[in-house]
Image (cartoon, rainbow, N blue to C red; front, side, top):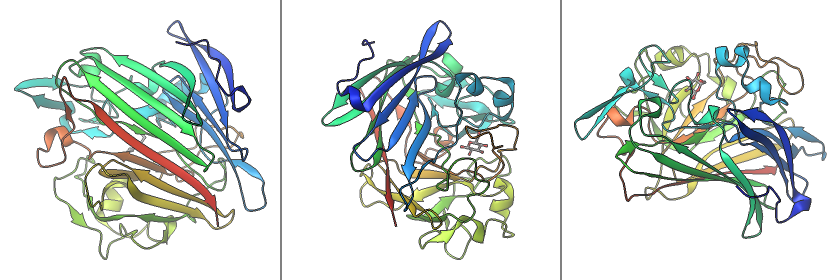
Amino acid sequence: MSDNVCIDEKRCRTELVGEVDGKKVYFYYLTNSAGMELCICNYGATIVSLKYPDRTGEFADIVLGFELLEKYRNDAYVACNPFMGGVVGRFANRIGGASYTIDNIIYKLEKNNGQNCLHSGSHGFDKVVWDSTPLLVGKWNCIELTYVSADGEGGFGGTLTTTVIYSLTDNDEVKISYRATTDKPTVVNLTNHAYFNLSGEGTESVLDTVVTISADNFTPTDFLQIPTGELMSVSETPFDFRNPMTIGSRINDIHDQLVLGNGYDHNWVLNKEKSDELSLAATAYDPSSGRFMEVFTTEPAIQFYTGNNLNGTLLGKSGKPYVARSGFCFETQHFPDSPNKPHFPTTVLRPGETFLSSTIYRFSLR
Ligand code: BGC
């Protein structure tokens, strides 16, 4: 780890906020030329805050999170377990039956979601301290974070070395680059679990946010939220976001998939001309503030989750309770339960291969 001095010090501030498992934990504040500010914590490689102006120039923090490290670790947080802002891994989303097989070896994972493993269990990448250092990549201030997950950790096989780089550009983009290698065959699916509220965290609802998702199909699930394996057309369903729709306009429709997810909590299959291309996956627009967000990714899919399981027990940075649907997540990813669905794009990583993935959140005003 470096001495925590950023090359462009004016645009990078480091604050020591505590210690976990004997390792120092920092909040890193990056700013760009327009004054946008991104705060990253090396506990969980977490996006803690993101400050962006509205049409009148007034800044608000547009991601849910906490001002204190302790609030990401206390009993209330663990009970709600929202994976708030963290990097989820080594396998984001659900693995059915909490088990998978590679090369005839069965791997048994933690069952932390009924019979399933959700987001790699109770001690995944969002709950560990990453090695971290600020650095300049090209023109942009970045935070580079590395975590070495031991062979057998959480039940997964293979030592997995993961590096995540967050950059804040002068084009008002937060760019996340992921890279991972392994010493034994394993499965990898990495995402960021930030909850956005473009009106500002602490405002009660995101139901008026207007969303698009570039997807003709999604993966419907069974009652345990495991994909059935089919792709379902979004046509004439509340899952059709090919044209702009507010989140709230259809979220309470009588549709069995909405009932199963208690709202939107599904994986959309992104329309792509070429797999791995960086393409527009989704947008979100908040008419009241004018804040507009675009999501680009190299990943084949996105989990659009409307914070249905937030239950008001956690008080956020402005002291307001985080209630259901007060934030939404755009989790760029491979499909849930891919390890058990051979016809889904593969999530297997073998020694000698490099997992690479990029996601960009770009912000502007309308
Ligand atoms: C899942 C939800 C879950 C949430 C917080 C999302 O990615 O799809 O079902 O409640 O994470 O754990």
